[in-house]
Amino acid sequence: MFLTTHAVIASSVFSYFPSLSNGLVFLMSFLSHFLLDFIPHGDENLIDKSWSRRKKILALLFVGLFDLVFLLVFFVWFYDQVVVDMSRLIIIIFGSILPDGLQFLFFIFSGKENFFTKVLGGLQLFHMKLHHFALDRFNFALTIKQGILLQITLIVVAVFLAIK
Image (cartoon, rainbow, N blue to C red; front, side, top):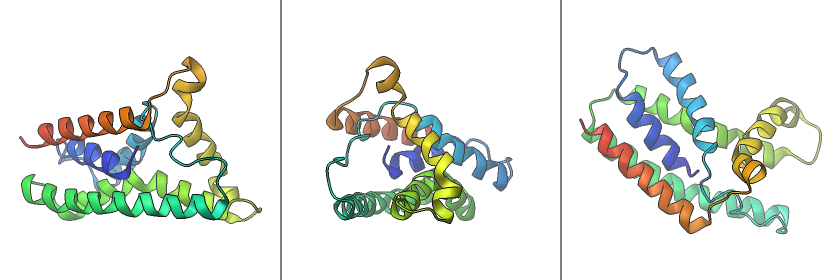
């Protein structure tokens, strides 16, 4: 899923639990990322496997930066509309998008044995298994258009629920 989708859903859900500690909210936001990635969402094959490593990195950077612009707009709007502490909102958003950041680091540093590939290898494998679970297990996948529509729908529902 796109970063914005992860951040919007986590922010909306955890706005309902103001008494949870920031550490627990961070952990739950981090884990929510994997729960959401379990849902087929159409962007699993956004990057063509036949592309060169450089082209893949540039494509990921482009998509990621574009996505971060939407995330920034959401952050400003959400903070203005929903009663939530700014530091808590930052913790929620950071926790919810961190798995993709770690996945990007793994991708950047993969290809040779190093700290990142050793430490993040298991997390990367787990993350990718979740992304492809429905396809591998049930031969079910969404197209990118269906996935974007699903993610927009999830965002709209989450925002609607957050505005109490």
